[in-house]
Length: 482
Image (cartoon, rainbow, N blue to C red; front, side):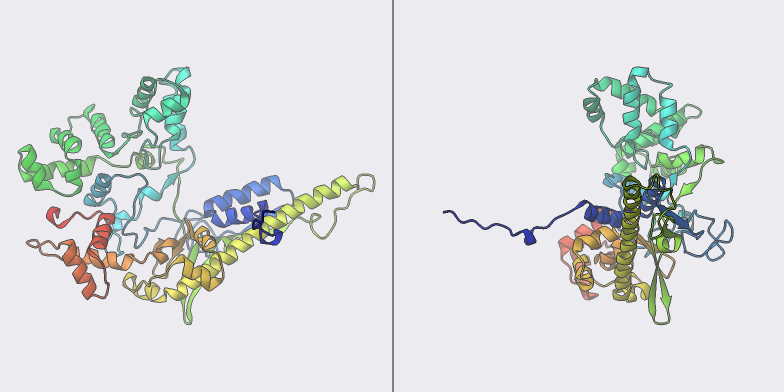
């Protein structure tokens, strides 16, 4: 007889639908939770929502359209730039685009301080009302044949928040089983629409499309085509002199072109939609905090915006008090209907309350552990892992990860940061690294090995290859190119 180990029934982990639902609700962003609440309210007659009028930025009660505590209007919390995101990236964005952005001050960070003219970050503003996709599709369908409508829908549906086309022409052609030439033609029609640059596949194509659009009413700077088409990488690195040497023009001429590009072109065509669209019908939704951390006399307190905003209850008759119904229709089917929706609403409310408890426990632990960071700044950020917080709170590490995913915390100094930043041990090193590079002498650029040695002197033991990694994440060129 062959003996093999078998799992006992009490040792088998059973993942049921209720556990999956609770986990999903925990992972929701604030906007996703809001949509889930609205959907549940529409579908479940037993579920009742009490929504309080509060400012979605500071959590204070609203007496009108403008918050008297922080000055923001109604439910539209304005954007606050992420404070210490020194390695901020955009999905699938090339190095040259990042460098171009930094060189032209589209994302300017200086030890956590933000320039006054950078308060409105195009990457966190999303048009509401008639969306850009709806406008594009409506215009595009008038330019192409009816049989190409599915192609138009696929192209528009694959435009990301920057206005770039995420999928390749070949991928869309294969998915729709059509010829690549047909997709290419529809894409050319899409790229002829406003805002200029929409539907571009990379930064270079985006800027060239905008230049072509400018050339219709006026004559653009002729060198702009050459520099963008052939020297965009050098431009992103700030290699003005090298560009001039290669195209055999003076450095001042190149700087004049750079000024023209900065004043005329924009790397994010989707953001331009807010400026060229109907301003009377557009509003913006911005990144807003999920957690507010406040300084008190005894330490830090945590407030959850969702908890202040929403209240829930079971509609009378679905809870402990039975509905008053005639004996003739008072049957098991009615009671089953009542119990089903009542149980569903109760479970949904329990999941949200569990989400709130978990978020607040994690936020309180983070505020306590990183209190020096909250009071003194990024240089005092302590190393912390999700596993350590999970062990401290007797939670699963995956639960901690789901809870903080895409959640933002408003710090006592008014900065808004992703909650994941509390676990980024590299921020302190990157901040000092940026300071060292900024203050280096023009006749002696510090190598990565020298930077590693200086960081070690400041109490941050670090390998040269780690310095290289951090420098590349911050899109800072090596010493020979600075």
